[in-house]
Length: 304
Image (cartoon, rainbow, N blue to C red; front, side, top):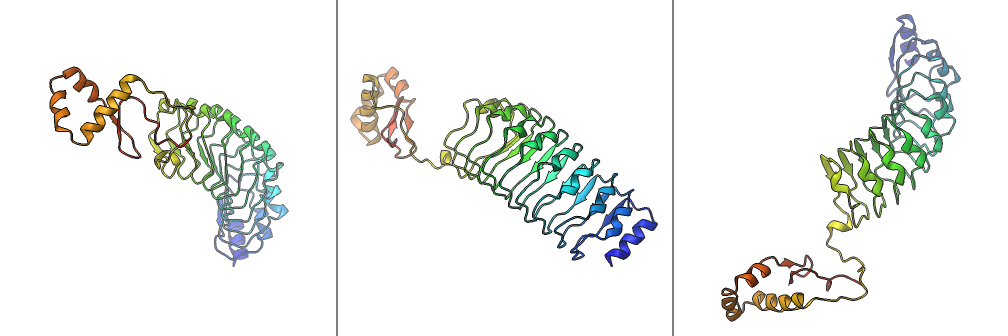
């Protein structure tokens, strides 16, 4: 049936061919004759390779190869110089051959979600037209710094990987608007992230982040997802100070606040006649862990 559809497309000089869900184990050889083709859909089949004839599709701009059985990104793709959109999600890809990046200089969107990719080649820097890169649900442990030179990149999706850090040169992605790195092993974010003036969406949920970069508030974010990180779990963190040294004002304030907290009516009546002390104690804080009142500094519930 697929061969019949290809023959019809040849006769009609078709510009789009849909062979989704045809249980194909090979691409019909006649597809190479469709030189006017701009979109080829081969999603939901059993393909593991592309025929050499596919290199004749010089006008192809959209190629869907999602949910097949490819073990790597086919090298034949490097000859598709007009390709702008490539979907290869849901395969068995473990490797992106570096040579593939040589010919995909017009690629704008690359979707490799749900694969087994462990490494992004440094040659990805050659994809200078890339606007959207999606590598969710893979096995990535790090991101090459070469990715940070993709000046047109607007969306970067790296969720559900094994990343422990993001490259510091990430600040070079000046057009980045959406960064999703949820469900990784990140323990922090690079300070360079704060220089991404166009970033609108940041998703770092489900990591091991204990503190944000000091200038994160300078980014004009519209959406921030940071749940399931230690910074929101009220867990103790390691203390920087070797020992706690309290001022006389802090010691006195804590003593008074403790009595007030315990309901001392005598002290409560005396405070009413000292407006300055009442104003000072009115600025008290409470420990997020134990609820005890303090004035300026609280370290008792910090694990050393």
